[in-house]
Image (cartoon, rainbow, N blue to C red; front, top):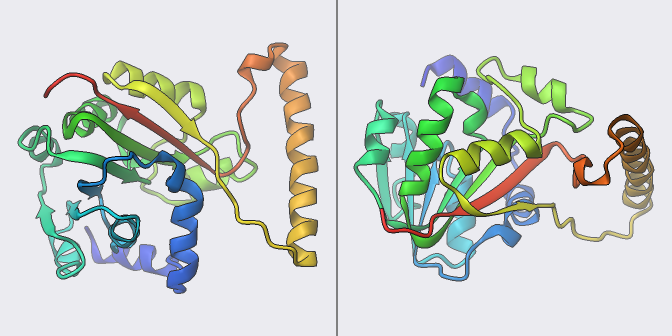
Length: 236
């Protein structure tokens, strides 16, 4: 990872650990499997996913990143550290190891020709019944275009349809999409914000229904993050 991009990530990183932890809980708690032995935070970055998975009760939490210098900073927080400049090869060398693989904000950085092989490799990391959890920018959200182009290294954003295609084509099974579980706060500011957001999302659903005519095609939500999980049933 270049120093310029590392600085770019740090500029956009939340400083409040409690807010970071709550954000992970809102988006990922529902997607976690019952078996919590070994997990991998793939493209671990600054290690927020490692901290979250440890707090969620995984016995062993490992970290992988292409940035060897960055992942080395997670010593003492992860039970094992992995770094490789050839991630596709690394994925092929570690099949069937994990009950959960978390790939938060990873796939949108890949060229199209690398997307399917990478997701296939991530699925192969799983033990039978383990789950891959993927988080990507949601193209239909109000901020979808901003998220797509707000980071120069982003290659794409996703809808439920396009992410479903990628996961199923890669061999994922028991596919689920997960809506955020925001915590209720009774402050006037929060209540006003949620009321306005709900009204806006209702209007967007009406527009989609008029445009496409099929309720089955409506997005489940219009939040900026799209989270899906899938499993692999067969042995690696």
